[in-house]
Length: 210
Figure: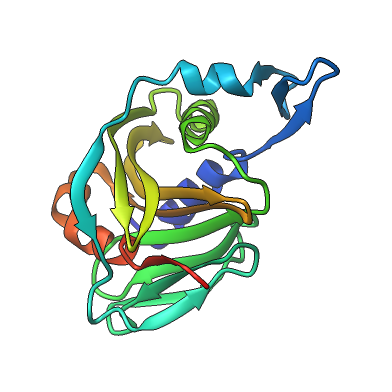
């Protein structure tokens, strides 16, 4: 699989990932409005999600991850190992802030942020439903809460097929009063098992900035 194929996967996944608006009705209920004209109550989205377990392990950044990439929209950053990962400002992917590429392996990443605060349970619903618009068979194969460098994140692994390519997303979702952040890695499904340690080294570099 070439880099162009991975770029297509990243572009379509993030195109509509947060393509919704939050509106408060006259009765005080919060509604999520999507670009296709559909809507859902925010509380309903969260309540429809099955209970997600908390991983008791504490995750911290790798010692070799010593280069900090700062978000321009939220108070978070990502420590990475510059010997293993290259990064640049997102170009083709307008929803993302940064794109990451491993220097030796076929695994990629992206940092997406918005100034809107979104509950993590709702993030799961949004990510899955919008991802299924371009990959109808997209499904969540792993989910859990984690303590990463002192912050609570939601880990999601979603697998699907796009243009005949079987792909896997593995990433962290985090939100606070300054905004919402997604740090996502992606590769072919047959590679994710062996690449997971590489993926988690990047993901565990996620930190909240003071």
